[in-house]
Length: 285
Image (cartoon, rainbow, N blue to C red; front, side, top):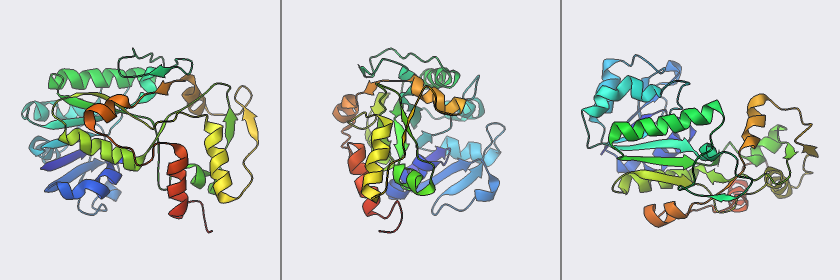
């Protein structure tokens, strides 16, 4: 199989690191041309959201598997805008689109699943829903849409935040978030590659939890004092950071387990942080 990745970001790179051996050829796009040719085993192409060069278009057309990890713009999906003709020329492609559980919006902490109507009120989540629908329309429904929870893993986790001095314990009563370790994202992508047909699946852990609890657990592993709690109502935060607290839901992953056969290596944040700590995250022991 030939794999092309639109957006060689954090999750996509971990997927290549773990499952790259399953593909005869791997190529993908990067925004910054100075990072080209720095990913072992991956042919990189510069793509800034429009006007791709002919070689990039040709590689997209040749791909057997297309992994889309580029966020949508305010008015359209840049990947569809740039490559629609090439994609239409090869209907046999397996297309996997990485979306977000943020599209569910605020359900007051109640459980939701793929049958729950999204309540996207933010511009970025409305754009995500529009992009999902655009991919469904382009493929006639034969697209695997993976709605990812909050991503963490090596270099991007509560241990690293504590070490850097950037961790905060923001407390909003009743607020919970799901998370997902990047290794489990990689497994879910590969499961979607092997699955026949399209659909929507939530890729998240088993235990939605208050964000302040995650920081407290990481601090306990490190043997340091946890940051003082800060009330959400009065905490100084960017508008973007504050907006994430507008979505409050417990997201079920039962469909991904049932239909894709996903088995989580890290079903809750404690197991994920334990493994990261054992691997050396968070500083010297």
